[in-house]
Amino acid sequence: MTAEQPPAAILWFRRDLRLDDNAALHAAIETGGAVVPVYIREPEGHNIGPLGGAQEWWLHHSLEALRKAVRELGSDLVLRTGAAVDVLADLAHETGAQTVFINRAYERDEQDRKIAADLDAKELRLTAFHGKLLHPPGRIKTGSGGSFKVFTPFWNAMQKLGEPREPIAAPTRIPAPKHFPKSQSLNSWALLPSKPDWAAHFSDLWTPGEQGAKEKLEAFIGNHLHDYKRGRDLPAIDATSNLSAHLAHGEITPARLWHATRDLPRSAAENVGHFRREVAWRDFCYSLLSEKPRLDEENWDRKFDAMEWLYDADEFTAWTRGQTGYPIVDAGMRQLWKYGFMHNRVRMITASFLIKDLMIDWRKGEKWFRDALVDADPANNAGNWQWVAGSGADASPFFRVFNPVLQGEKFDPDGTYVREHVPELAKLDKKYIHKPFDAPPQTLAKAGIELGTTYPKPMIDHGFARDRALAAYKRLRGAAEEG
Ligand SMILES: Cc1cc2nc3c(=O)[nH]c(=O)nc-3n(C[C@H](O)[C@H](O)[C@H](O)COP(=O)(O)OP(=O)(O)OC[C@H]3O[C@@H](n4cnc5c(N)ncnc54)[C@H](O)[C@@H]3O)c2cc1C
Image 1 (spheres, protein in one colour):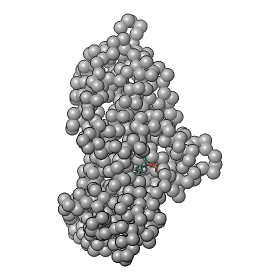
Image 2: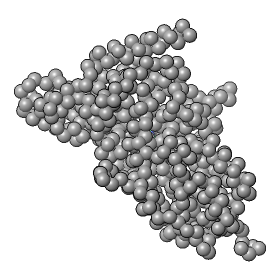
Image 3: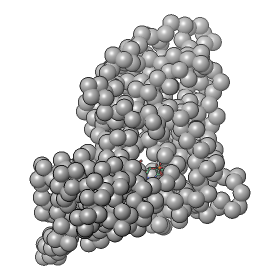
Image 4: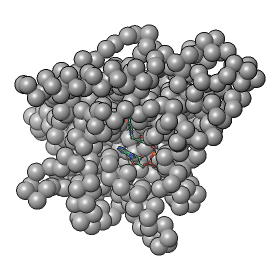
């Protein structure tokens, strides 16, 4: 290093696998020194829960895409395994870096504070930036300075703040160090499943990486946004952005979404408003998570600690495999298994079925989703499971029990979604597609269905299950009032 040349800076990529609108990258380049981009595979326990299987598949492809993009700008991506502090200290030693730049990942704030302190002791500075959310958590406050527990006032207050910050354009060059530090090979991390390759269909829908995110955003604005408000509740049509997995891996920022939907014709205003409101739910879930970092384990409403959950391993397995005998539930669970994704409306129906029809603790469902979803997100997943369970902030009340037949008939009226994901019911008359158990024998025979053989009989009677759930809730409330 010469006197005029500033020291190298380490850019530590985490859940922000992008070059566009990346404040940490921008700041690292601004130092004027070489930039050393690194992704660290931290041992289990160094993250908020291990990364789920579906997200490991995503991570492999996303890192491949990021490495290609970084190389195109004259640099490279270092891959290392180990505790973050050790890896960063080694890299600093190898490159002469004195600062590590990161974008904040609020789910690991506590862990990052410790890392910052440990690095400090080694004379390495950790500098953090915002970008993951529309507004940093804690910025949106009630009149008395507290945090919101209800979404609508949170959203109203957010809109009063005005537009989120302008996104920062991707750099055109990343200055590289003279000698690039050694990297592990991505393949050696064995992130992709094999024997069996349960992710075989993921690439039918997903192109991990920044470019894939940009294409999804353009397709959404060009083809689907105009019908978002009506279409977003109908699982048979492609009406939503499909950006959640890209957001979860930080391949695109919500500020970019906000600004991309800014200068559209006035006729789009209502749908744009609805879309932004959904994106704001993500901020809301993160504001809850910042208040309760173990949102995936602790009931927001502690009264639910006394809920009398049941657990039957065979019932749980039938739910995970889409073999409950309720077509809309089975379609959702099979969509999840095949594509690592499930439509939002059906997430609510399948979660309600697990929690209220089977009385299985929401935490079991949250973990299953976390492993199976490509968009698994510590705030959104836990926040939404608690919303369905009734244990969350601003949650749907427990006594609102979804009827899987009526939900199916309302949101998948022709049964198109069920026919796609539960092919053994494909030929069934529309009238019975959400309740094959009510179909006359000749109707079933005509569709080639034998209940209990080609497709399961309902694993539980919904009316009985509903009464059982409401009785448990009544006891819970009674106990809370007495206590
Ligand atoms: C039980 C359950 C579990 C869920 N788990 C997750 C999860 O792990 N990760 C995840 O990103 N979303 C989760 N969601 C929320 C929602 O289902 C998905 O964000 C949405 O289906 C993703 O599709 P999309 O990108 O096309 O959404 P769009 O309708 O296009 O919405 C745009 C973006 O807004 C955000 N968003 C939309 N709805 C919600 C919501 N209810 N809460 C928070 N953010 C929202 C997402 O980032 C989404 O990508 C869950 C919902 C339920 C009911």
